[in-house]
Length: 403
Ligand code: F3S
Image 1: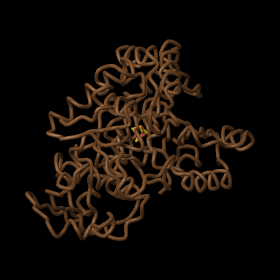
Image 2: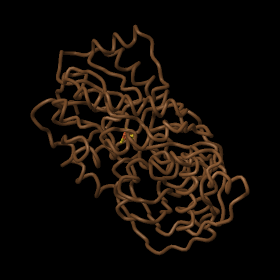
Image 3: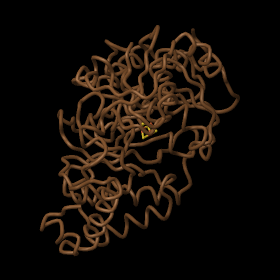
Image 4: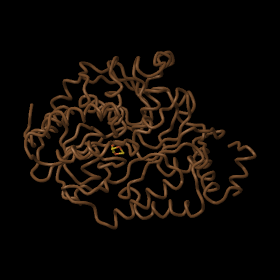
């Protein structure tokens, strides 16, 4: 790989150990992918922030960087951390909370601006911008809906790229790397958060390693496209989806389509699979969770207006957690009213990567296909999936199913 004089100097240690390490790793990854040069990025997004994901080894790695004065050289955000809040279910063990706080403080000291899985709401990328992002839903959003360019990086790699402000010119950073190889035609789509989420899981299963061109979802809202992409990223490794007439310049992709596989998905077939997942109720402590990925300001505002307006009809079972970026703040009065109704604004946290079973939670009701995919393994709970409106109603009616 060609390196500029400045890049060579960093590799030789001119800026110190963290930057030399970063250069060595990024160059090695780039060379393995046949990249010929490095390119600047304007925003890095680090994943692997939950202590449950990275453990002591990850904590020690970040500690060693901070101990050697590592600082991000471009705008950098980080994924949410484990849910270290105290709730009516109880809290996580003190040592876990302590280690999680260390990780958060180290990343802040390096310059992380926010903890969220929706970095596009903290700093919206522009069309054609190069990014080094590591959260799959965010990468898919940036490539597919904005037309920005980011590979789907691993968490440590994105962190090292944030130190350098550079990535390798390969994958979807080059035009050929963005071409769809899989074609999916969707029939009878019903636009809702839930169905878009379920569809994302299905299309990901059909195209596990290649970028799909998806037709039949024209006119889908950005909110529903976001739900689709978050789920798609759980079952596919592809960093991008080309939605017909939704992805910027989607028609350009049609001109040089070189499709290897073609599929058709009828939403009617997904509906029967959904009924099993909706009715898998469990005994024990229930948590209602909306916000995987983190909610936009508009979504949270609408939801809070509804929740505070309706009031909770009975003391009910369980709490409702709403996931947002730690940059979202609400006044104390609103938080008090919400807390009296059993609603918690979970700022900067990810319940999906938190061992909720340690808090005594047995099952979770959510609208997220991504949470459905990961929570049983990572959080140690059963998951029931429902539409957002149904979840809010059920919660407000004290855990009684409302259809
Ligand atoms: Fe965000 Fe955690 Fe879901 S990082 S996308 S809330 S799995």
